[in-house]
Every structure is written in C-alpha cells, then in structure tokens.
Length: 475
Image 1 (cartoon, helix red, strand yellow):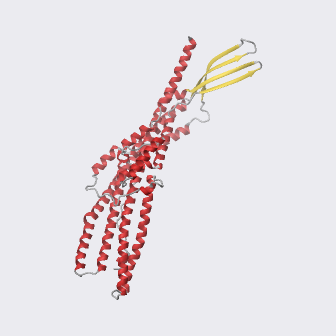
Image 2 (cartoon, one colour; image 1 turned 135 degrees about the horizontal axis):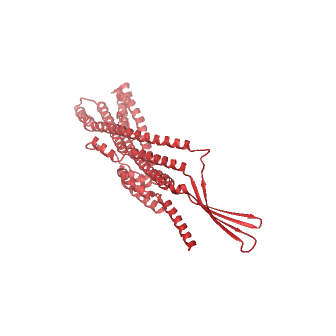
Image 3 (tube, rainbow, N blue to C red; image 1 turned 30 degrees about the vertical axis):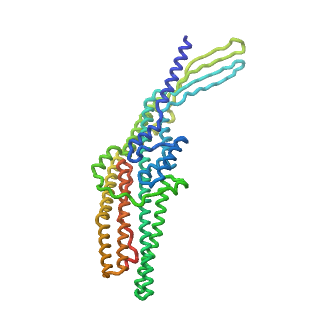
C-alpha cells in the first residue's frame, strides 16, 4: 500500500506539472478572430490563414470569383487577403512569434539521468529524475509574462494587417487613377496630332506661316512625350497593384479595374467622428501598452529567479554484488542551487530596468505621436477634399461653360479652329488636374482610416494638375 501511495503521489505531481505546462498555449484562430473584430473596416471578417490544402483551395475559388468581375476597392482588399502569398506569409510569421511568446510561459521539461558504475565485482545503477523547482514556484509570474507577450504579438498582428490593407487600397487608387489619366492622355495626343497635321496642310496651302505651324508641332511633340509617360505610369501602377494582390501569371490577364475613381463623398468626415473612432482602437497605443506590461512583468520575474534558482530531484540507486541475493537499494533526493558568485545578475537586472523604462517612454511617445498624426492626417484629408470639391464644383464647370461659349464663337467665325483646339487642351488639363485631386483625396482618406486605427503614416497633399504643354505656353 505504501508503494501504491507513493506511485499515486508521483502520478499526481506529474499530472500537475503537465497541466501547468499546458495552461499557457496559443490559439491563433482566436487571434485572427480578434483582428477581424478590431479591424472590421479593413478585413471585413475575411482574414484567415491557409494552413491546409482544403483551405487554400477554398481561397483560390474565392479569388477566382473576385477576378470574374470589375475589381472595386473592397474587392481588391478581399482578393489580397485570400490570394496574396505575402499576406499569408505575414500571418504565418505572426503565428510563429505568438507561439514563441507563449513558449516563454511553459515549464522546462524534467530531466531523467541514468548511470551505471562497476566497482570490482559490484555494479551500481543510479537513476535521477529532476525538475526546476524555481520554474514551478514562479509559474504564476511566468504565465503572466507570457500572456502579456501574447497580447503584444496580437496587437502587432492587427497593426501589420491594417498597414498591409492600407497599402493595397493605395495601390488600387493609384492604378485606377493612372489608367484614367492614360485615357485622357490618349485623347490629348490624338487631338495634338490632328492639330499638327492641320497646321502642316494649312502651311502647304499658304494659309499658315512657319512659326504657327511649329507651335502646333511643338504641342504635338510634348503630347507624345506625356503619352509615353502616362503609359509607363499606368503600367507601373498596375504592376504595383498586382504585387500587392499576389496575382499569378494566369490571374493577371483577368484583372479588370474600374474606368474611373469613385465620386467624391457628399460630405467629409467630421473631426468628432474621427476622434471618436480613434479613441475606440488605437493600435500603436495598444502595442506600446502591451510591450510595457510585458517588460514590467518580465522584470519582476527576473528579480525572483535571480534569488531563487533551485533544481530538485528524486534519486534511486541499486547496488548488485556477485553473490545471489546481494542487492541493495538506496533512495533519496538531490537539491541543486545556483550560487551567485561570479555573476550576481546585476547587469541583467539593470538591462531589464532600462528596457522597462524605455517601454514606459515608448508608451508616452506613442500617445503623443498618434494624436499628432491623427491631426495631420485629418488636415490632409480635409484639404484634399476641399481641393477635389473645388475642381468638381468650380473649375470643371467653368471650363465646360467656356468650351460651350467658344463653340458658339467658332460657329460665328469670331475665333479660329486653333483657338478652339487650344481651349480644348486647357479643358483637358483641368480634367487631368481634377483626376489628380480626386486621387489625392482617396489616398488621404485611406491614410486617415489607418490613422484612426493608430497606424497612419501620413500623406502629402500637393497642387494637382499636369504642367502646361510647350505649345500652349507659346500660343
């Protein structure tokens, strides 16, 4: 009975150790669900990791369905989530980092050692099963440290996802705007080519001098250069979007983008709306808080383990002699203590104290930086909105009205064909500038949405519009 009780106690101790070790685990699906909740405006609940062939096949089917229609901005984000290998690699790396954070809360495995010693005619067998007693005693602290590190990794995962989704949005905006500019550049080039040919024929008929013909040809030459640049810009923007979406060679021909950017919203976001959204979930601030908590808890654990570092084990030795029945068994325990003689741990504690202090300052800096970035992002957003609205409500209608008036003047033979063409070129430049303004607004909108989550990098708002063509400067 005594032997059975001893075995029961050993089984109970082993079960407790295994239970404690399993307490600190990682459920990455829960982490992904948390991201889908916190960043619902970015992932729309579609964020998942392709771990097995069936999941990858389902994602491939979703990607095929998305590519079967014109790819609008929300569909582009969803396509990147299910199709981009880079996005999946990001999730896998964050999974690995989360698992490593959870590993820090596990208890070290017990160590079993066996020895056989022969002295003359006697053979001695020694068995020792030892565990780190300090790990068992400090398990609550270790678990808290691991949980704090897991929280930091989850905040970093959410932040990385928001940054990547914002990059996809920006690539989509630039690609669509570049295609729209290309279509207008083609019209400008065709009109310039026709104008130059008309000037050449009029000079041949004696109705145009060389100077006037050269001005029209100069504009045509400049339009040809602008067309080449627009073609490259459209190609580069499309390829940048393709890389963000992770499209394969067979998927690229199926990519169809809208002909133009979405219209300007009727009203802009209000400062109160932006501030309220920013307060509900600031990822940079959450990440800094999680890092500070993890550093503070790790520092407390270090202070305990520097003082308490004990290894305990149970020993069972058997000695067998040459004669039959001469076997003796010895039982006992061992304690191993780390003596702080050469390294008292002061430098490690000092380094951890400095790290905790840095984390505290990082938290304060994150609070101040995010507030400043949010104000800057909203200023850029509102400026871009006002400029785009000014083009839509003032500049474009003014050029249209002027074009209608010039048509009437041309029909009345009060102006010539080249005056009409020059005005058409000016109107086209205004349309190109309006496209630039609308592109800047949607880029500012994407940056503001990221800044509201605490990850905005800011956007530069410049004066929209292409430079004047040389032919018009001299006309």
